Image (cartoon, rainbow, N blue to C red):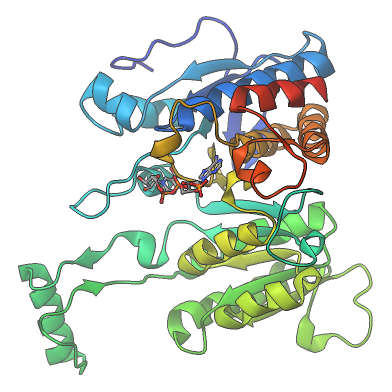
Length: 408
Ligand code: NAP
């Protein structure tokens, strides 16, 4: 495969992913997008820690070969565009990418690079584990009760990008057709968006969530939807979820309304209406384990859950498909802190842990997670946590990385 401006590494081998099965050599080439703003600070710190853990736990037998590819501001400077073909090609060839945050200008016909990447590579599941690390300041009384993995559908819903600006010719045409032939009463000057939800996309996402619950022995999968109002999109998501559990996981799952007493080793399939879920996750936090939900609900819910355990600065995330996976920090570029060696690299670091687990390099992943938790317990933290903790020692990003490496 030839690239316009990227030079392929001469050392290392490609990761293979096919039909969701991952095969990783001992010397994988891992493409990375540094990210804009604080992306520069956190990528540097994360790679140092990952390299140290891999070296420590595999003693030279395994090594990651990092390969820089470009998106966002760096791509603009190198290619004259924010998301060059080279980058998309590199991810589809090399299968895994880890990326820092990218700037998304608000409005003005510019689509989010993150959303575009997810759709082009068909990374249909946004996976966000949310759990509490002892010592992290939290706004709730029992943050330790939170331990969920959210599977958010990534390709459909109002994120499909099908919308027309108010008073544009296309919006008028769509509204005209709907009002004249479908009996709707949409105000002619409205903007219009379309929310597609399909059985195919819903079930492959829910399948990934149930498979995760089976693999990790989780006791429930909760389908979160707004089906009481949007019956044929959100309601259908719920129905297709239960249907999948009945047809393909009959021996592994049981619907909550069929439950009589203890579920035994079966996974309980539940569903909750989205607004109710926001209060349930606060009031009955430990009743939830794996969550599968539509795109917009998942977007809101992931951030709300992350806030409950101490915020986005440490929340990891991945976008996973059957042929590729993109691991990304969940916060933005926080431009005011860029290049100040100040912010918390925790989100990207725990994202790298997810990547190592996905690669089946469990020892290195677990070691980093434990060292991260230990460093926080020692009250050695970056500014964002230090300002909320009594007696904390405030460290720079790079110093925090060094402290984690020492705790490996
Ligand atoms: P943001 O960059 O996430 O920053 C908002 C605030 O969150 C920061 O001012 C800081 O709060 C805190 N924060 C974020 N990351 C942190 C970290 N690693 N350590 C410590 N604190 C952290 O959100 P934004 O200002 O709304 O967005 C800025 C740009 O990022 C926009 O262009 C947006 O589109 C983009 N964005 C990209 C992604 C992505 O690439 N995945 C995601 C979200 C936003 P304090 O100042 O209170 O300390």
